Structure formats: C-alpha cells, structure tokens
Length: 291
Image (cartoon, rainbow, N blue to C red; front, side):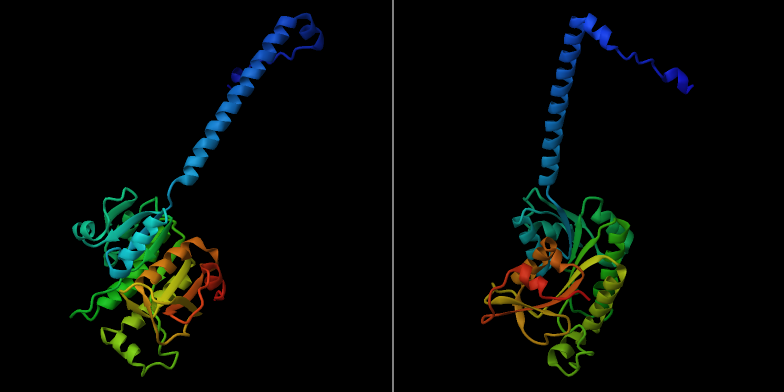
C-alpha cells in the first residue's frame, strides 16, 4: 500500500541542533558536498547540451546525383550540414558524390516508388528535405508525371509520415506560363514537349502549398553548368519568363533557404544578371511576399 512506502521524516528542532554541534557540522558538510555534486552534474549537462547543439543538422536530398542535386549536396557539406543523399543508383552515387566525407550518407530512394519506402529512406534523423529530382527526357511520356508530379507528392507524404516540416523544391520558371500568357513562348513550348513537364511541376507545387508543410519553392531560369557570372535576381512567382542562372547559384539559394526564416512559405523565381547589384539572402528572401 502507499502508506507503507512513506517514511517518517523527523524535523530537527532548534534545541536539538544546538545540542549537537557535531551533528550540525556533518549536516553542513553533507549540504556542501550535495551542492558540489549538483554543480558537477550541472556542468556535465551543459557540456552535453553544447555537444548536441553542435551536432550537425541532417538534410535529405532527393535527386542527389543530378546536376543541381550534386551541387546542393556539396554546398550543404561545405556549410557544415550532414547530408543523406537519396539516389536511385547507390553505386553510381558513390563515384559521383564525395563519398569519403563522413557527414555524407548515401541511401537508395526512388521517388516513384511510393511514400512508405521514401519515409524509410528519410528516416528519423532528417530535419529537412530538398527535392532536386528531374526526369530524363526519353520515350516514356509519363516520366514527368511520375517524377515531377507524383514523385514530389510521394516525397511530401513521406515527410508527413516522418514529421519533417521543411521542404525545398527546385522547380522552374514558366511553370505557370499558361496563366502568364506565355503559351507561345518558345521556352514554354520546348519545356512542355516532353509530356507537359511544366504542367506536372505546377501540379506538384500546388500540392506542396496545400499540404501545410513549411516550403520554399525555387523556380530557376535556364540552368547553366558554368560558374556564376552575375548576381542573383529574385522575383515573386509568375514574374520571370526569360533569363538563365548557374546551377551553383541555384544550389546556393536552396542551401540559404534552409538558414533564413524569410524563405518560409514562399515561391521565388531566380535568374542571374551581370548588371544586378549583389544583395544579401536576408534581403532577397525578405523582398518576396508570402502568399
């Protein structure tokens, strides 16, 4: 019974304590040793917390061996993040990515295989997901839908299953070209030749927005493999219909979006221009309104 577990606590009276000075001295010593112990415990706790805060944040990157994905992985590692690279072909990824880096973990993840498998790949230790997947043009006209639409949706669902609440998507300018009156823009026509790629991307964007996840959707202009030649220009959605940008800068914008709360719940369009002034990411993201 509960009564049995209670012990009698004898409260010493002033008279009793005075009667026994030695008793008081031993009490004092006991109290001091308790304090020292508590202090030691305290410093140990702070040290542990310090180590925990230094523990690297792990970011899951889907499409990590792609031309942009690979750069995102490299820049995340350079910034001190740990990276879980989700790839379809693990062996290929080992040669493509700097697999010697202890902060890099390569896992099999195919966005077209459903959200359960993706949730397993994302695991319990990923704090954010960056989606840099893109289909390869080929004979499969459903590829854009499988990768750019359903694949992205699967990834968002996997995040929901793992309680990951930060999602960065690399999309494209002109995804909403139809609404922008750009149906006859050669770039819009070209990008939609392969099974309506842009339409598929737009559907995925809309799904992300409705999902409630904390998102940043990045829509770059034409992607270049060469190093950056100008500064990043950032505009609100459905603004840019021409221009290009180095993949290095796209990766940089994706990595910086993780660091700035100003990037949350926003769609940003980016190109680079040699005549553009250099602006901080705080300013760039801050200049775009949330929808």
